[in-house]
Length: 284
Image (tube, rainbow, N blue to C red):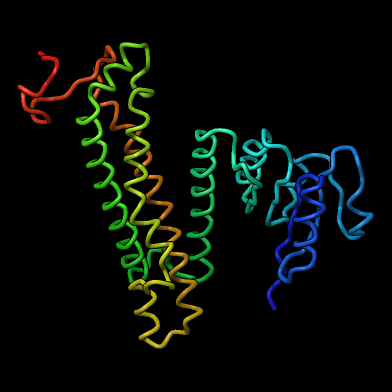
């Protein structure tokens, strides 16, 4: 039988008492190990086996804890989740996820980077137990799937970035004239380009195993592999694909938008992008 997931609970207010703690302690597969209470010591009265810790650092530094559930006030969600993710923990956050979209994106990027890295290392060295790790039988097909999906994401990102810059030239120049930086003026275009680039990967993850069976899973099942094993392989690969695509597209877009501005932070489009008569401003 699999070991239960060790859980650390951050905060012991109404939400933790009524919703999270009862769920964790009654549903098979979870075990409440520690509760962060900075001043009170209420949790042992209901759950005698739990440990009370006084700081977040003490909680996330505990190697036994695998999952951190954060139930504290809204302004603590981002810094607490960031520390937990950096410590390699799984994280459950109450809503609102964060107070700003920028914080949410940073948290998502951090979660995907740490989660995907751990997942792929575990997949290659523990599940497959490759020796050497670059065994072509596995490295080439898995690498090919990840690279292929990444190329698709980058291509969509490029296309949407170019389209957005062309179609919203007046908006960008207006923002620059009002004092906005190139990053701020093009932020909405970059965000939309990222969303469009990630859409195929997200759709594939949403429909996987329900609407359709991906090629890797289908091939393993046809070859006689147990469906549960095929699912585990496919989930690992899809997580790797999602992480690689998101990080690659994010880095590309945050570098590519700068090409539309010169050293004086003026917006520029070449004649290859727009017909000369359509350009509201002539550039030398």
